Length: 139
Image (cartoon, rainbow, N blue to C red; front, side):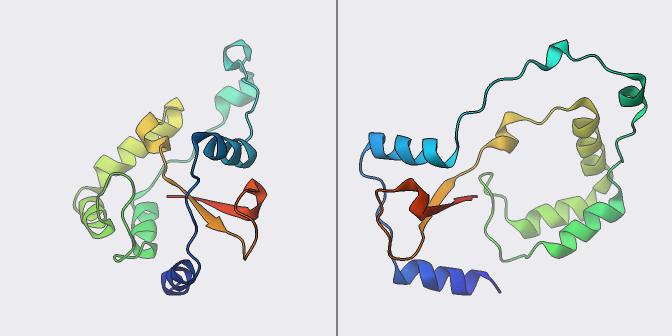
């Protein structure tokens, strides 16, 4: 339901792409400022930290999420249509719950899961040269 008005707005106000690498770098730097690195290896776990249980992902959780995701929404960077992913989850939910549980417990998330496509949407009729005049949308 939300895609139609958004697509109508995008068609009515075309946004030029950044024309130079320098301008693109300026926009990305303004929207996503660099954070200082933190060394997690020197943290000591306390008894409380070790005893905290990470809730498991249940089949019920997966099914609720599947029911919320629209079949006609665009796929992510993997190109897998939502209907195909939902069908796979419903056919073998244990495979997905085990994968998600392992990732949560070990604190590991594959780098491919962290890749996004950045789309910049112009805020009204403001100048394209100012990075703060754009919304960033990660797909």
